[in-house]
Figure 1: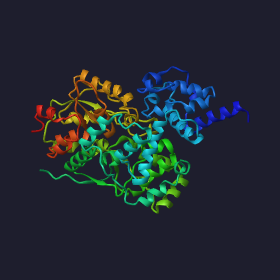
Figure 2: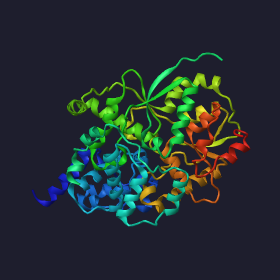
Figure 3: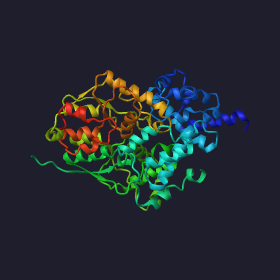
Figure 4: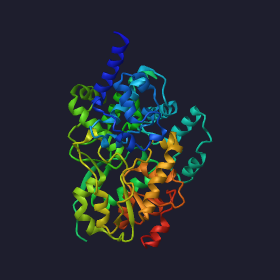
Length: 182
Length: 285
């Protein structure tokens, strides 16, 4: 397969997996106008669709935008063509991890991984543990310390996790793609 | 006092309501009990999968939600308050209805059936469906003077994948108006609170949260009432505006109107103390 058709097939895979026909996008920018997080993105959402339309999948897979997107669906609900942009971002994140490309926002991926480690250990999210480990791996101990201390003082960060009893059953769930590849 | 019939529901708290936002869970169970709605915590539930599992591994996300569905006894609806939990549990149910093979594999793994007919509903929907006629009868405090922004956040406002499912717009206003409060609808009620970016990129979230709070102040609201525990937390911890407003969990206000007396243990957990406002309105001593 030549490079051009390889790129096209990746774009087709994004379309099939997200169940979204992004070819319908005509760049009206309604998504960009509505996105609350646009300032933290390197490409506005419509530009990510444009990259895909042009077969520039590597650029789409390595951009920051797909990680900054929290899936609030503001773009999806505003798109006049009914394109579910959040589903495209979702698919691109998964594919970025699967393809092993350079991650646009590594600290956000790190956060998600810490959450999963917490879920694997306890079956439930232990926020204090997640934040401490995230701070350790991103070396950002002092960023945001005041908020953390306020939350501790208000007993909003439990020292001990809330746990699932049948932790073996949880371990069974983690015999999954993420565990095998991370 | 007239007897009201008791109704049983399975209750999925989710990680936030079990820990960071336990005041939301306590006040919800309290108000449900007053209304004769019995919330029975799902035995040994696990995290719904959350954004993180669904970002990194779809199979894991589906399996985590599916385990919870396999724990839900047949014959009573499964209630959640957290919009994201509700979303992931429902998505998993829809997905497993269409995918018999995955369902059978998971059932084999758990050694028990996954009941795909259990209805998964939001607590506000429970109230609208079963509790409205009970509200008037059980109300003990008038919410008169409480000018609230109904803050739904993003997830209850219909993600496209669940577009044929229940729509929640207006439910908070309907319920709290019936109890005497006044909704303020000109503020940013559906703007996303920042979700997990509040943990990874607080500097991105702070201006957005400030915009939401400023819009509430400009609309002359005296508080915001949230449908989501994560929104409640983000609106409190990321706000740096000069004028701060109390951010209530929906169930706290509901329980207060229904005469709950154990509010002190909920309100001490707030970063913006709501007690001065409630004292002004003579809602609490």
